[in-house]
Length: 146
Image 1 (cartoon, one colour):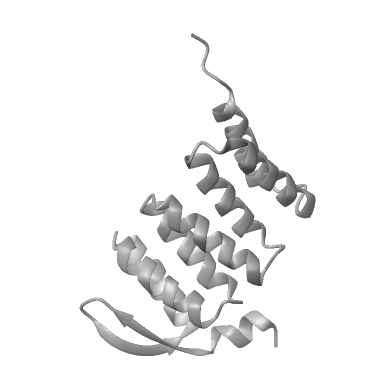
Image 2 (cartoon, rainbow, N blue to C red; image 1 turned 120 degrees about the vertical axis):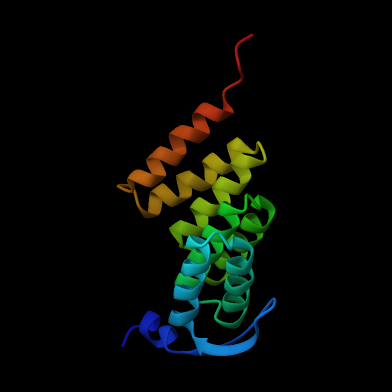
């Protein structure tokens, strides 16, 4: 059994606004967060994902759900914090590196974001999403001609 499968079945305790407390597996929590996101309830999905990542910091699917909620809410400060926390547990996590680069880019810190993308590309040189993100950051970092 892989570490992901082990974490899928771990029980976590969630407390959601207006819904009270509930125990569910990590896999169920991620599915619930995705469903909430599809319904446009990103704030609740973010709270759920934060609790999940606090209880299971090595569960990648929880981090991915949190990154998605932060991006949907355009909460790039929280996205930066979440990506940094994820990288403390998973230093070679390309999705976390991409999330951090996205957050930095949104705060006009393009050179730092490009450095992070370069690190991610060393880990996954053939990743087309990394190439697209690098090109967007390069374009955004160029000064506008006046």
